[in-house]
Length: 266
Image 1 (cartoon, helix red, strand yellow):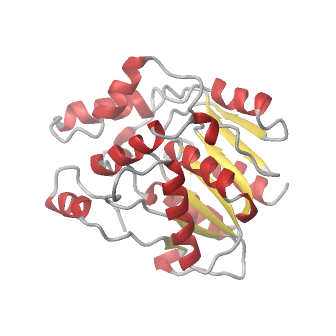
Image 2: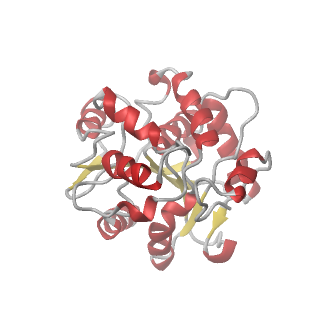
C-alpha cells in the first residue's frame, strides 16, 4: 500500500526498489464485499491509489465496493499498455471479482481504455477522469509535469510544478505534495509510448462516463469532446469548472456526485 510517502524518504526509495506486487486496496481497511457491484479505480501516472480515498469513501457510502489498485513499484522488462492491462486483470482475479465498473484517472484513463479494449466482457461501465491522449497540451506543460517526479527539486520548486501542471488557479496543491514515484512513472510512460494510440483511444463499452476539467492544463477539455463525438457518441460527458488535471482533490463532491449518479443510472 502506498500512502503519504515523502518524495525523498528512505521508505520511498526502498518501496520503489521492491519487486513485490502491491495489493489492491478494497473497502475500508482492506476488506471488500462481493455482494455489491465493484468499482475498480486506476490512479494517475506514477501516483498511488490513495488519490481515490475521497471517491472510494463516497462509493462505499453509496453501497458500492471500491477497489483502488496500486501499480507495481517496478515492472519487469518494458511493458506496453496491454501488459499493464493484463496485470491489472490478474490483480482483480485474485480478489474473486468477475465483472466490475472501471474508473481511470489521467494515465489511468488510458490504461482503463486498454483494459476495456482487451477485456470488454469484464466491464460493466467505463468512467474516464481527465481523459487525455489526443489533443496535446503545450510542450512546456509536459516538462513541468515530469519535473514533479524530480527528487532533486527543492520543496518550493516542486510544489510550484505540481500547482502549475495539476491544479486550477486558486486551488491548493498541498494534498499532492507527496505521492510521486519516478520509477513507476518511467515504466508507465514507456508503456504509453510503446502502445499505438489506436489500440486504446477509441475503446468504449455499453456505458461510458467522461469527466473533463475546464482548467485542465495537461488533458485539454477538447479530448473528452472528441472522444464522445468520434468514438463514443453514447457516452455521457460532464465538464467541471474550477478544476485542473488533479481533479480528485479539487472537486471531490462534484466528481463523486457525477460518478455515483452514473453508476446508479440516475
